[in-house]
Every structure is written in structure tokens, then in C-alpha cells.
Amino acid sequence: FASLLRMATARNQDGFVPGVFISGEASSGTTTACKMLAKALGLAWHFNGAISMPHEMLGFIDAGGTYHRTPFREAYEHGGVYTFDEVDRSDPVALLGVNPHLANGLATFPDGQVQRHKDCIIIATANTWGLGADANYSGATKLDGAFLSRFPMRLSWDIDVAMEIAISGNEKWANRVIAARR
Image (cartoon, rainbow, N blue to C red; front, side, top):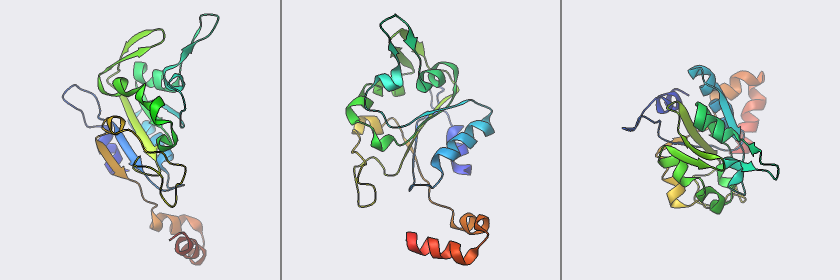
């Protein structure tokens, strides 16, 4: 968590926090860590899961002319920690629709362009590094290199075995579970 906190408080020359990509196995706590980060920084927390279409991040205008906002839009415009959870389950083509928004500090939404808020922290979480499926995560997709380049800070989020044993209340059982997982 200390490494994540340092990453989330770093700034590029343009004043924005560089994108953070966290990879950890299922149930390792990546999403919880992002929520805790927002609390520690006194910022709102916004999130969504895997997407299949760009409008899931950018929003849309319905037939009545009403724009429907998204968690991404809220964080982008008003600041906060935005967690793009399970990003390696998203359609890579849909992700390309948000690439410019992640790099340029200006996003085009269906209702107009918006400047990125200086306190918008964008974090992608995944079970892989975005290089495609593996033996454990067969549903993971290979993410486009341009999309991955928007996340120059990378953090491996392993399960904290010592904490797992400490909170289990049964060290023998915890060690059995840990051995089975390995």
C-alpha cells in the first residue's frame, strides 16, 4: 500500500498523476486497495469493471437528449481515484476509444470536451499484465500496447501471506489454504 500511495501522489511535468497498473491474483485486494487509497487521500472513489463498448466509460446521450454520466467522467471532471477494475477482461477495441483521454488531459465526451481534473488518479487493476490469457486467467485479453503505455507505473500486488495467516484465526488452516493455492 505504501508503494501505491507514493505512486498516486507522484506528478508528471503536466501536473497529472501518471496512470497506475496493478496486477494481482484473484482476491488479492487490488480493488480494496484503490478504495482505501481514495480514503487516505480524502478523494472520492469511482470504479467500473470490464467494458465491451466505449460508451461504458464515456457515457451516452439517450433518445430524449439526456447525457448519462459514468464513474470515469465523474473522476475525470471532478477529481478522485478512478479504478478501472478487471481491465484485462475488457474488449481491447473499446479501450482504444478512451486512449486519448488517458494521455492528453482533455477528453471528448458525448456532451462536450472536459479538462482533466488535477486530482484525477487513474488506476487499472488486472489479474495479468495485459499480455493475454495464461493458465490461470484464460478469460484475460491481450491489451493494445498504446493503451498499456498510458499506465507507466506498474505495481505487482501479491497476497500478503503473513496478514492472511494473522486474520484467519487458524494458522494451520491458513497454511493449508496457502499451500493449496501454490
